[in-house]
Length: 395
Ligand code: PLP
Image 1 (tube, rainbow, N blue to C red):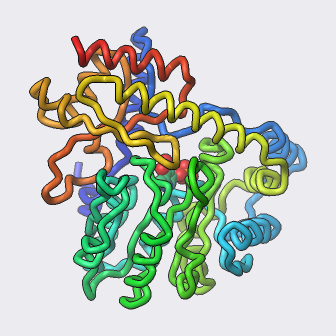
Image 2: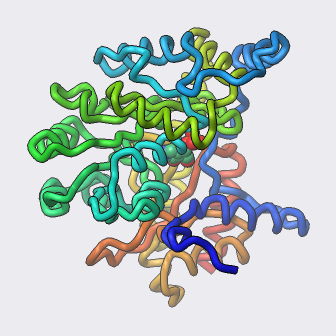
Image 3: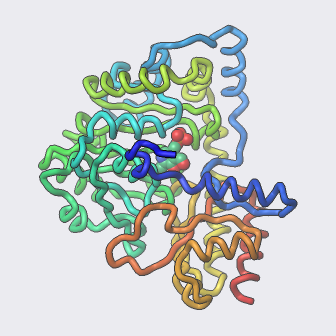
């Protein structure tokens, strides 16, 4: 069968490939501990679920405006204004079915064939996929373990050319759990302003943070008008399956993104938007409790990983991922890369993790190997999963 050439340029999210493998192994009767998935194991808070079901009962089940229902856009504008210390009006908000479509819209609306886009590497794989899909040139910005998975400003300066249209950032980050400091953000802002570059700032993990305060690049003077803020409900309100997120950007760009949404999705589901209103207006206790629990699990998993011979793991400051260095393990076992290790751990220890290779191409000169473990799973699973990995690797 012959498909359009552009399909060759489209990547994927390997987490879902591994998830399918895990499901299959479970169906075959295997007891798999899953550190692969990037979603909270908590349930959506009850008040939010009730708001969603109430909306269905009240027949809020018809098409809504493509940009989102006005009340929700107002609520999001208020929330983003408050949390980022900027002035956002409802016209600058586009409600989407999760954060992911907004990545697609922003890159489609702004990046022409041949334009360059700098993106974090290792990073969430969808950025690279969509940049390549539109015919842009994806330019990886190395995130470095020795900088707690931030970047070297000189690498960013080198990556930027006259063709750079956009810089993508993600803090706290998937897959490393790393956070960009105020100094990092100011460095990016200076380069973006000087070179007239857009910044796509994926802030989906902005409230899952364990030390310091969340900072958005949009708060830096001169940045609001060139930043597209991405945020949503999937992670902090455990609403991955509801598909609810949004983008905040200048009105002119929002207009273009709304046209894309009208072509692709019409609007995000109406009743989930009512649930979203409740998420922001209602009590936040469940979110604090979830972050408190994640912090305990983070400490447990970091300690457990560092107790395994050949593994070293930094303490991440945000999100719910750890990204341990497994170079020594790969070397000791004669494995070629993290992917071989991931397969070994899956089939010989019944534990699912994701390899470095799921998060972008190797950077030039990158010699280390890593795996990602999501600790959005119970402490019992963490203890048992690490016991199995230790048994396998220290045998
Ligand atoms: N951005 C990052 C960095 C993510 O890790 C994810 C999901 O894992 C997304 C975006 C997608 O979020 P959503 O499920 O709201 O589309």
